[in-house]
Length: 270
Image (tube, rainbow, N blue to C red; front, side):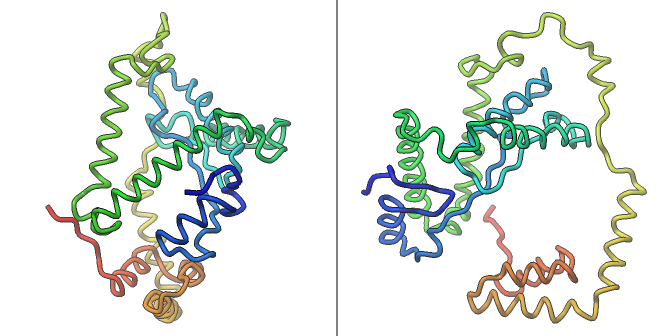
């Protein structure tokens, strides 16, 4: 297998592992190997205890993602551990990205960490783990075959349980959660008084009314847009462009049903 030393994920696979392995082993064409990728910071690392510390965790995760040249980044709000984010918490989450990209000088240089042994070592380990996961899915008949045996679902559950066990035993130290606990924790009253975002009955009914109005307003254009979407899917074309047109005149439910008509609906075995 080729070396990973010259790979730049943000700009596309270069010499080495990418083209050699994906092109030969998986039959991937050049276009499919031009990777642009999105990162979302870890929701699993958010905790209800000492929730203000969550911004620190998210900041470090965002820094690593940006220094690895991710093309798109979502930073979690610190209160997502307990509720739907508020305007204030979302503003803080956005500020994390802006401060890193606008104020942090090192982030203005591409690949600031490349050349360090630990980064190269971690890259190799991640590459090896990804290929092993591909092999496990391939051995189960591909993505759909693995879904039939609930492989992906079980894998996520196993990893989550592994993480929780390490957290509860203290093997994985988490500041403010299982180590260095606050000697003066907030009172139960203070925790319970925190505003939890919940939609009211009126807001839910209002959304349904808006949906019906949207569908009625665009009904003369919907069938044509959905037909083009179906044809693109059946002909193996890139359906993203048609999806962009569809969302202007069709709801998510209408689009989903149209794609079900073409490809069928997945139902897992019980």
